[in-house]
Image (tube, rainbow, N blue to C red; front, side):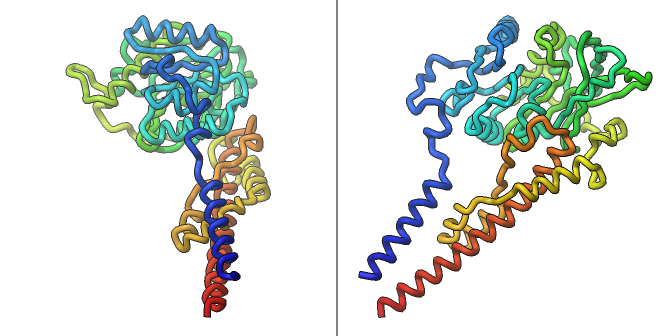
Length: 372
């Protein structure tokens, strides 16, 4: 009788672990039986304002691209994206995306999907920093006047740069300060003049390989008229066409890759207030808060039932920080918080898994003794 009870207990543990660790198909999708036939397109153009999504999608359609405007975050769920090649995020309207949609987009790109993010994507949705390979924060309050100039940094991506001028000005816009990984390919810069007369420069656009997918980030400004500026639309259209062609073999007469390797990204133009540094106050504060907030997930104790494999998974699986703690924070703070939060959670989760492994052995020993 005791053996039966113990076996039942172990089976219950195993069932709980499977339920806790598995993200089901229904959780990824906005509807388990979504009628995706009504939403078939190569490109989804998302904006929280329907008129912006409509204008961008119409422009892409005029360029011969199969684009569809959407303004419901749930349409970015698994059921809708599985046949979509590219997602364009024009505007987000604040941190309102459900976590399952954010994680679904992350998996979509990592497994081979393409994504384009415009302006506020990087600081309204910090999880996208991992997808796009960088982060951003508002620094435009220092501007002498609300105007930025976009310049081409690398014309090696000839498909993206078709019919794009070497530089163009965007009126009534404020600059973003950007931090990015060395692996990004910088394509555009933006400059503005501060109230003290100093000219500042930041990276305004880059491409980044995330897993098997490709991401493009561009920060022309947050106003609707700027996002629908003819030159901005042309950059988006060129990049969309480039990304779709990358999924096939190169088309004769078109060059989709730089003719020469992109040089290492210089960091001389990144302000010290934004560059990752272990001595930066915001970075240090973020690390301290991330370490303090990180509690890990006690469900990883159930992974110990699977022995060393479960322990290894607990120590290596990255646990993302809660979005509420890093929304509207500076890039330095986000970098520090995310770094320490992940590290601390891995350590705690590994400890939980080891404890679960020891308990499993203890139960097995008790069963063995009881069966004699």
